Amino acid sequence: MVSLKRLEGLRLQAFLIPIAVVFAVLFAIPLAQSLYYSVTDFNGYSPEVRFVGLENYQKIFTDPAMLAGLGFTLLFAIGTTVIITVLAIPLAVLLNRRFFGRNVVRAVFFFPAIPSIAILGLVWGFILSPLGSGAINSLLGELGPVPWLSDGTLAQLSVILVAVWSSTGWHAILYLAYLQSIPGDYYEAARVDGATRRQSFFSITLPLLAPAVTISSLLLMTGGLKVYDLPYTLTKGGPGYATFTITQSIIQSGIAQAKFGQASALAVVFMLVVGAIVAAQLILSRRFEGRLS
Image (cartoon, rainbow, N blue to C red):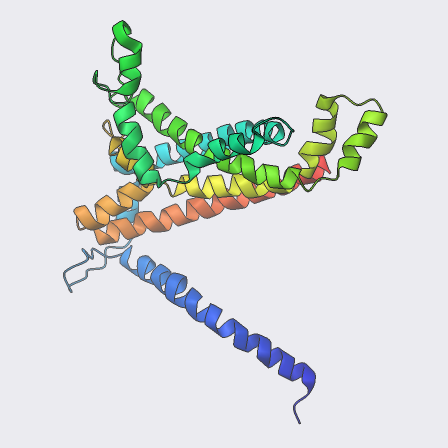
């Protein structure tokens, strides 16, 4: 007779089978295929495949487009993570206070996160148009048109700022949810002890927001590393390769140029880079939480 403990174990294993199947189909098998194609000259169409060893990996570090894509992707991910975190926390603190029209203000800040990023990219493309028809250049008037999207540095800055504009409100609402779970007795006790708002923020609010900071920064970093839609719709990756991303480079190599093996090698390298960055971020976040607590 089968014991109840063994039946419980079999039941748990049965629940894990669908998850394992989904994991294998959506991750393990594609990863194995990418590893295989990354050492071949497979073009995605021809059945003939030739083994090329590490040639595809060597090209990654000599191709200017891929190097530029890696550089801007890291700049975008780190820049948006830092700026949005710095802006979202104080914004959440302000939105947590009581004032007239608070719910309306919260909705206004959250609204940019609702439309598709691709649509926002197209809209901001018209707003930042370097021609006189651009909304911002029209406001500047006689100061002359500013090459927001045709200058490399300004284009990078524009893409990052549009991402900050669209995501800060969403992450502020995330922090707001954590703020509302902090008991008011903590702040009342701090006021009785004579603590200022600044002291209460650094002694109560920020330490208790540490888990939210970890979640928010992890979402921002992973989202920033795989970004594609905003730079593509806003600048098409230009001017030159100024706003070119790794994801765009993978798509261009694999589909437009029929270099599936090279695209697979880039995807493998990118996966390792993302894994290393996320692991380092989690370690630093845990140390940050430990120091605050």
